[in-house]
Amino acid sequence: MIEFHFKSDLVLQGKTDYSDWITRILESESFVAGQIDYIFCTDDYLLELNKQYLNHDTLTDIITFDYTKGKTISGDVFISTERVEENANSFGVTFENELLRVMAHGLLHLMGYGDKVAEHKAVMRQKEEEKIKMFHVEQ
Image 1 (cartoon, rainbow, N blue to C red):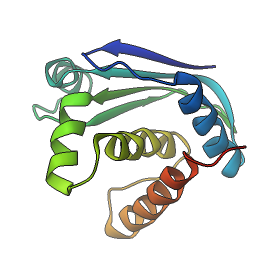
Image 2: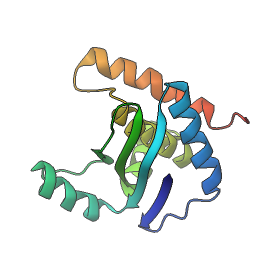
Image 3: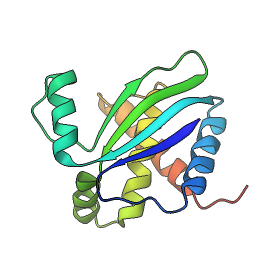
């Protein structure tokens, strides 16, 4: 089950469109959905999680907690909507595009993709772009 929770001012329109997109992403990588929770929050909310669970005192756009078992993807994906907005402005893209990128990024982490080294980061970016394009594809 894919669920969306809001701890910021964001109101996600068309939740079914996002759920369907996430399902298509999973299927495209031969995974299925377990319990996936997207929590849209503020910088302060995510900073506290970053400090408490990762011992990092820095702002970030996303933190993913992985509960995946085999091919069944489960996890909590916390996204700072303030970071998404700032990054969208910095990268010269729309808020929606950056939100899709970050949502896909978290899901890709749950599927085992990393981004700590340059080679993995390049694959992650390519996968993000591929998955963003899937959002507007009708099934």
